[in-house]
Length: 289
Image (cartoon, rainbow, N blue to C red; front, side, top):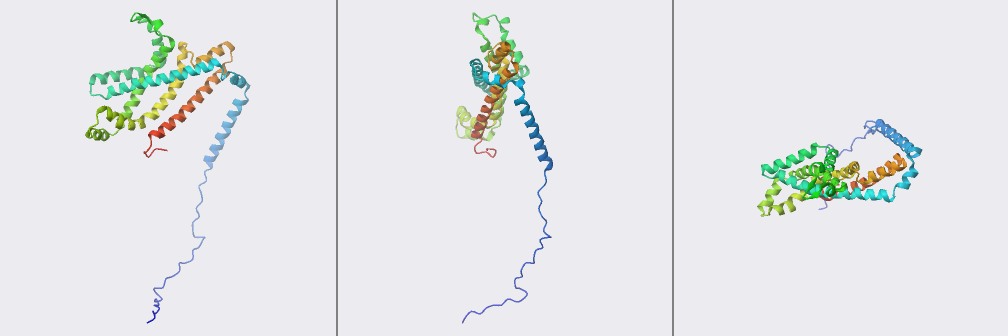
C-alpha cells in the first residue's frame, strides 16, 4: 500500500517565531573613554615639547656629543666598565651561591656566618666599602711579605669591593630561587636514588632559575650602572674617562651626555638579553610569553 501522509493536528503544528521589534532590542554602545584618550594626548604633547626642547637647546652641544661619542678614551673607559661588570657578576654569584648553600645547610654555625655576611655587606653603603678597601693599607701595611699598596691597585680594589657587595645580594637571590622549588620534587629525586649533586643539577637548579633570572638580570643592569662609583678611587671607567675630558675642556654637559647615551645603549641590550633568557627558562609555564 502506498504510504499515507500523516497530518498533524492544528494544535501541534510548529508555529513561526513572532516578529522581532528592532526598537525593543537594546543597542550596545561602547564606553566612551574620554579621560583615557585625553590623558594620552596630554602626555604625548608634553613628551613632544620635552624632546623638542632637548634637541633644539644649544646648551646640550650635540655636535660635541657626536665628536666625543666614539673617541679612544671613551671606548677604553666603556671596555673597562663592561669588563668590571662581567667579572663582578661572575665572582659575586659564585660567592653568593656558596653563601646561599651555607645558609640552607643544617649547620647552625655556617648558617650564622652566612647570615652575618649578608647582614654586614647589605647594611653598609658601597661607597663606604670601596673607601675602606682603598685605605686597607692603613690597617695591614704588609700581607705575606708584600706591600699592600703595591698589591692592591685601584682596579683590584674595585673588583674586591664590588664583588663582596654583590655577593650579599646574590646570596639572597639564589637562596630565594632554591626555596621556590617544591620540596616534593627533591623528595621524588631522592626516591629515585639521585645523589645530592645530581639532584641539584638536574632537578633543583633548572626550576630555581625561573626565580633567579629576573632579579639576576636586574642585578646585572644595576651593577653596570653601579660601577660608575669606582670613579671616586680613580678607576678609569666610562664615567671617569669623560670626567677627565671635561675637566680639560670644561664641556661638562655634552660629556655627561656621552656617558649617559652609552649607559642607556648597553642597558637596553642587556634588557633584551634578559628577556630572552627569562623566556627560555619559563618554557612550559603559564607565564611564558
